Amino acid sequence: MFERFTRQAREVLIRAQVEARELRHDHIGAEHLFLGVLSQRDAPGVAALTRLGITPDGFRSQTQDTLGSPQVLGPTDADALRALGIDLNEVRRRVEASFGPGALDKPLRIRRGWLPWRRRCVEPVGHIPFTPRAKQVLEVALREAIHRKDRHIGVQHILLALFRVKGSVALEVLTRLGAEPEAVRQEVLRDLDQAA
Amino acid sequence: MSQAVDAANDATSQDPTVGLRAVAALRKLVERLESLQVDNARALGWSWEQIGEALGVSKQAAHKKHGRR
Image 1: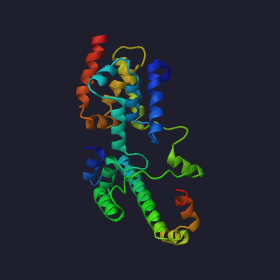
Image 2 (image 1 turned 180 degrees about the vertical axis):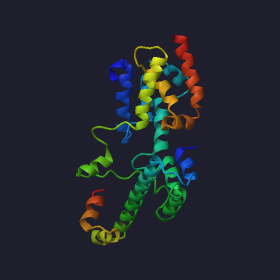
Image 3 (image 1 turned 90 degrees about the vertical axis):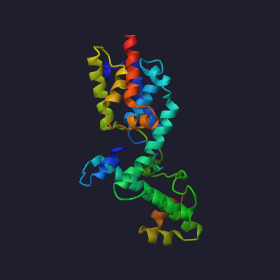
Image 4 (image 1 turned 180 degrees about the horizontal axis):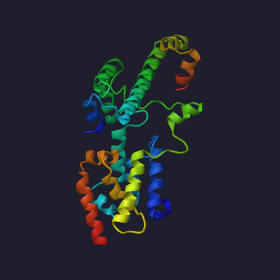
């Protein structure tokens, strides 16, 4: 399938992996693909994102806030814990009462462990797998290319696919940034249709 | 808002995405609390043996995990 990707679309995949690694995430999700798309500034459709104020830095920092890092508990963790009947805010309040403000959230000191599993906690090395949803985005990108009668899968098809696959962290991050996904998609489509 | 909240509202949900996320978040929370408690115990002069015993692990395991920080 990847032989049909344009050079820039391949760059998106490479960049997605780099972003996941740098954020110390153990997966490549739609959110990392979105960051990959944002890295290709001159690719079709990406200018629309820039115009709407969606920047790599802004998107990355909102992704971090949304997902948290392997060591920091974020809003997604709070939601997940609520599913178990645990109120993270209450836990935080009690911990801070004992150990001071920010006790639950300050960065852990880096563990200079020598055991492989310990090192992995600090920085994922080697292969980082795509999430099922990220794979789905790439499949939908192929369909977008066919739908638009393009011979190759380009950055714009990955971008359009990111809007099609619902429930992704990428779309949640967009919403949190104050950008309504459907409105952004329309803006992207307008650009693509103008260029065509 | 997020899927997890929707699923939490549905008490019968058996969606692995929600369940596994909850486990991952819980593990993160446990690591956090363990780190805070161990640091505090050390600051209060507890030995690795005492800490290990309280955590239910050997003193070597406790030291290996927390001693290098």
